[in-house]
Image (cartoon, rainbow, N blue to C red; front, side):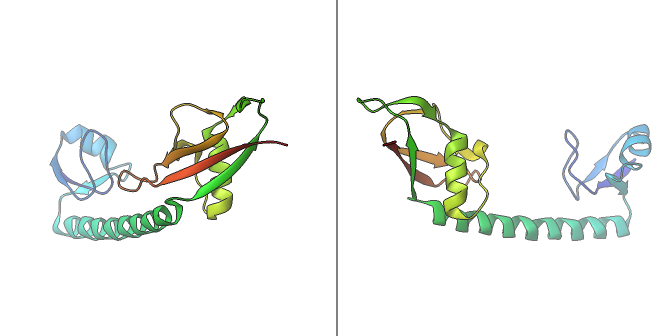
Length: 149
């Protein structure tokens, strides 16, 4: 059975692709769930429209992420934490702390999973931290950890 995918289907293909699948798989799984349509001229045209729409949305999202990346590049955020006399923190500063402060300063919600922090920060000072907004956009910010007075 020839079908046109209306959505990305893991293990099968991406939106707009024409695939040959087993009759039962197409009839019992793909078609009822709206993941695909029978390969007709109208279905192919519909898939092309969906592809074009997805491309426009992706381009818009990429532009927004690039703009946010330029805003964040080189940004310096200050965090305060309890520290001992030698500058060692009582506890640590983690990705969630950095993401919360970054969200406040940037005006955009930054998820903690986007902050690429190998180990929590346990020392007072300036620490460069990478923020992975997308595979292409990875600005580096400076986290300044100061001791609480």
